[in-house]
Each structure stands twice: as C-alpha cells, then as structure tokens.
Image (tube, rainbow, N blue to C red; front, side, top):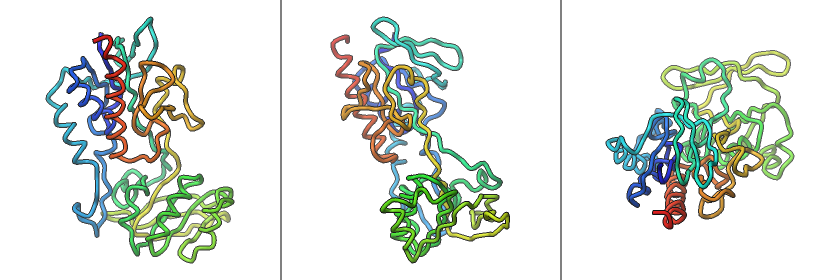
Length: 301
C-alpha cells in the first residue's frame, strides 16, 4: 500500500510528488505525461523568450527530478477513486487497483475547443486558450476573442486595456448585461460581433485570420495579430465526483490547506475552485497539498 498517490503530472502534481518524496513518503504519481499544459507555449513572431514570464523553468526542475525516479511514477490514467475501509483504491485505465492511505487529485482542466479547420494546426502559434497568461504581449496589437461566457468577457476586458483593438465574437448578448459587458459595449477599441459562427482559421506559419459566418449566412474574414478561444474549462474531476464536493462548474472544492470534505483526499491546481488558472499558482497549490497530506499521514508513518 502506498502512503500517497498523486493523480496528474502537471505543475501541481509534479510539485506535490517532489515534496512527498522529500518527506520520505511512499508516493506514486499517476499521469499520462510529465508537465501537463506547460509543454505548450504561445509562439508569436514579435516575441522572444526572455520577454515572457513563465512557470516552465520551475516545473522543469521538478520534472527532471522525477524523470529518473521511475519507482515514483506510472504512466497510466486514473479512472476512479473509491474508499475501502480506512484507505482508498485508485483504479487505472490499464486495470490495476492501487491501494493508498491518501490521494491528491491534480488532474487539471480540459479546454473546450471549437473543432473547426485550422484550429489544431495553429494552436499556440498565434491562437491560444489563455488570455490571462498572454494578454501583456499584445500591447498595441489587434486581437480576437471567441466565447460566450464570463471567461470570454473577462479576457476581452483585459485585452482592451493593452491592445489597439479587440473583437469579441459571441453567440448572443446575454454576457453583455453586466458592468464589464456594458463597458466593453461602449469602448472605442472593442467591436462585438453577435451570432457569428467560426468557419475556419487561416494563416501561414502563424494564425493570421479567421473566417466567420454572420447571421445572414454571409462569410467575412477578419485578420488579427492574435486570437483567443475562451469557451470554458472542463475540470477533470470525474474520478472523485461521487466522493467529494464539487462546485457548480465541476471543480473540486478545497479549503486553504487543499483539503476536500473527505479526510485523506486532497486536490490542487486548476481542477479545484482556487482562483486563477496559472502555472505558478498550481505549483504553490501542489506544495500545499503535499504538506497537508503529510500532516494527515504523519500519525501513520
């Protein structure tokens, strides 16, 4: 039986596992890969690496530490977590059932994609899914945001403070009936295109434009320096959905010490209801979760 199983190999999971190893816990990390979303970064023709503040270097430190510790990681996917007496059983996609005294869920989120031609080809080459991370790079640039909820509205608002022009492509006007929505509706550097459908992304080495279909069925092509798909984030919390409390978006609810409502189950990173989906935030949350798990396990060690 393991002391701790960490589910997920992104920033939160890597950090939690590294901390657990240093605490001499018998820990196993279950993940499909090491690094998670940090393996992807936005490339832009006018940006050099030194201009971007990223958490990748921090994450790589933990990743390199775990790459040679094969006993502490298993490249598999956790399907379900169940309680069994005073411990937990983690079932994997390969059919294994792994017993552990405690679990940290650090599975992150999945981006909701548009699924149109050109999206996959230009992802992270002028087209991305995180305005929060990259908005400061678009000073005096033209940008387009695609989305229908609060995430798209917030992203458009942040870009409007630095970009020369922002176009928000949305299906309806519902999100505009808020203080931020009203501000964007009257902003001189913001255009709102309602009920437009995305047909295709175009470009050469980088995404340079998008083809839209307006409510009348007519196609129009817009060009931009950068484009952001801000539809939604789907938390990968299904494996513990029957055990722990989730919020209305499906995120795992944690306290300030990353504890869920179930003793022995902890969570960290984007899969939780913690504010801001950022690498460095996830790194800190992963460390907190590991320390909380250690305190929980200490009487049994």
